[in-house]
Amino acid sequence: MPHQWALLFSALLLQRDAKGQYLFDLICHNLNLLEKDYFGIRYVDPDKQRHWLEFTKSIAKQMKSQPPFTMCLRVKFYPPDPASLKEEITRYLVFLQLKRDLYHGRLLCKTSDAAMLAAYILQAEIGDYDPGKHPEGYSSKFQFFPKHSEKLERRIADIHKTELIGQKPEISERNFLQKAQMLETYGVDPHPCKDVSGNPAFLAFTPFGFVVLQGNKRVHFLKWNEVTKLKFEGKTFHIYANQKEDKKIILTYFAPTPEACKHLWKCGVENQAFYKLEKSSQVRTVSSSNLFFKGSRFRYSGRVAKEVMEQSAKIKREPPEIHSAHSTPVRSVSHGESFIPRSRSQVADTSEGMAVISDEAYSPSDSVLPTPVAEHSMELAVSRQINGAPCSIEEEKESEASTSMHGERGDFGADSRSAQEGAGGDSALSEVEQVNKFVLSVLRLLLVTIGLLFVLLLLLIILTESDLDIAFLTDIRQTPEFEQFHYEYFCPLRRWFACKLRWVGGLLINK
Image (tube, rainbow, N blue to C red; front, side, top):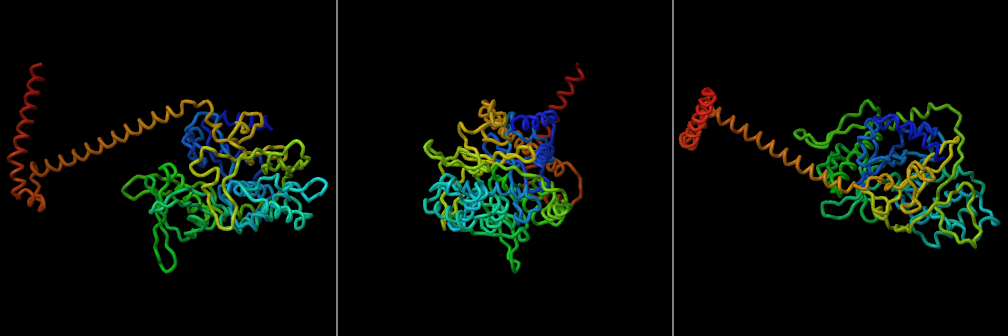
């Protein structure tokens, strides 16, 4: 596994100006993945802000940190119907992403649904229940959620023992996808914000529209065809929509930082284009601001959902053979216990969970990877063998257990902090960058001020010196205030300038 990833990145390093599309195509080629439009590459900058790698731009220019760069393959656009994806490899990768969402407290659900989802995972991981291999309490060894009760563990085991006997792994995974798709939080990648009253809220984009989650409920849901505009200014994010009976609404939220707000806006622009448009030729460049202000400009690049599904239907190759090594975290087991997961499972380190599966609570803030990335973050890594090629979608803890790209395990996506190794001066550099930004903003302000003064001076000269017979100019000239200004201030100032100019001219002639 390590040497194959080394070859992949060696090829990338040969092209220093390589664009994001180059890296993405390399990964998809190694995974033998054709339905790749649902996926993207995510990275975290030194300020712990997440980004999607833009495929049309140079990789090096998008990175604020120093190499080596750590990036993670993720589901970027959740399929509206994941179980109906054409190829099993695509369904498997989406399954791993949703399993990760469940573990990180993003795909929350009622306890009954949680038990069923976990049982599907268990069946896919270890196969049929076998009393000789699976002792009492075997389901408690797996970490399906950040935190759950013994009662839920027993329910998971009961379903696995009685209802799923004989299901092959791929069938269990498909059933998992069908169940997950029906949940209200399917496809939710929460962006923490605050509403106009200062109350915490989570904004997210799903295959079906824009949602706002507060407390334990969904407070807003706008279908994609109802959303007319997404705009941001600094930390402020606006959503414009037209609902039934021509009811126009504007929702306003505040992100933690301007960078987080811009990331939120770009995610919204891409999701709306992907799910709403009929053809990629309809995609237009979007501006974040008004007509008279430059703002940020962004354009989604790629196919839209309808085109992706049409293209998938044309795939006629033999399905690639999948030899999977699943990555459900396994809790620590003492040496005296004999339970060992089968080869379809892989032991991974786990962290103490914070979120709770319950009938009421929805709290994406308890996720170990909110936006921006929290201090104790977890990233998506790869541990899978497809036709002899490794891929990376398993959880790793940010601790001594995590490994960098060039580490012993050779995983493509490890902990986000490994991207910053060898960049110990990042904090100092960021301070310098902040000073530079401040200086540039002051210079821009001065230039604008000087420009305005120049325009005013030009208008003043036109008023006082020109003979233009224009009605509004004549009216201004005839006012007492202007006549006083003209004779008491402007004329003496003009004579002073003329005197100085003659003096300078005399000096130049004498020389």
